[in-house]
Length: 558
Image (cartoon, rainbow, N blue to C red; front, side, top):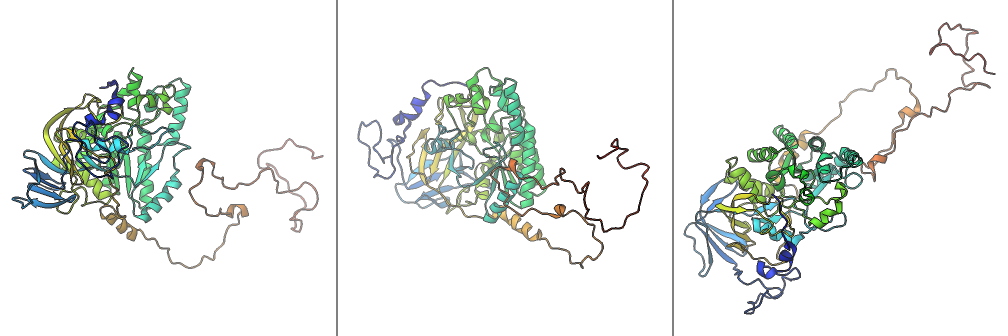
């Protein structure tokens, strides 16, 4: 399942002519001229040779697949938009025609969870935005989401939030009309377990999964759902890796909670047995958090919940590091940079795990790889649907195609692939992004800098209709009643003291000031001199047969 490809970095980063892509320093702002005959690489700003581009496309003979219906029709694309859908379309002469007979035409995939170019321990991932999005296009994904809120319940003393902090953050996110994404793990338990395992001499990648048992993910998911429900904030659980965590989300959703669950490529297509591999590099390649479950039945369980709608979106959490970067933690598993590949393999793995065995149909596939994400993150129907007026981000998918995943042929910038040797049935034959063909006949034709930012509005109806309704129903009112005029028990003044309200977001939750307590070293009476209650009349003598606390051995105070 794992292989190290010799000279993979040279092939992936230097020989751009053979891959049909410009060098990383290429700008997309120059004029697009025909390349000089015999030149090995395109000039700055030009498209690679063999990549004809047209603003007008006609896709004929395919079966259009949306999340709610499938039908046969042709599609005419112009100016990066879908202009016509139907039969016998009237189109201009000379339009580039794509034959999609026997294939499915779907909206481009949307991957809402990627970590491209995000530094970890001072190291930048091997796949930056250029290499990462290039690999995404090769797999049929035409959009990633970058502007969202991600709250961490793990990584103590670095990123971890307390429950009070999460509650306040969720309230702010709700008022903004955004979506709260949560990385759910019990960071306190993980921190203690890491220390214990290192003291036992366990320093390899197996220590990573041993310090993060399935229960710490499931508990954190339950706690996040509870806090989000109290704040009436929509919740999106990222990286659902275990059966326990998935079941918690499924149960909450069935009870009406506004929560969405995201299994990733790795949790759907691999398992955690590799952490015990004798090959350190192979074991380290699978290190991610939450970890892959050692239970080999987990991928099928997650695929079943994704297929029936208990989980809603398939992400990738793509974050790759070279073996040399992973080796920073060769003597301490807590220092291994976390992350796996999956942005290119995402759609193929979902098809293989869910559609091929009959767990879901083609419409459900479109929903979990594109449409649901577009609805949750408020870019639907511009994205996530094949319809007139929508962006021309399309995938022509051949359900009969077969491919064996390998680091030798993938487009990611690392020398390993955690899905090495996996055979997938079904895959993209043509990918169209912004109305341009970027993948055809196995050839990837992209230009660095051609991507664009897609702004999204807040308060997506798909999510916030229920939140707004619950806000109206959740209004609380005090009970009108008369003033209490009965007896009131006297208590110490210190017990009545109430701390002044302060922000729940503190620099360090573990060092929050404790509530005031009585100083027991200070006595309330004196052994000599006048007393505060001398004015109260007392009996001259009182015999105590059994004093409270038992008899004292003190016979004299002098």
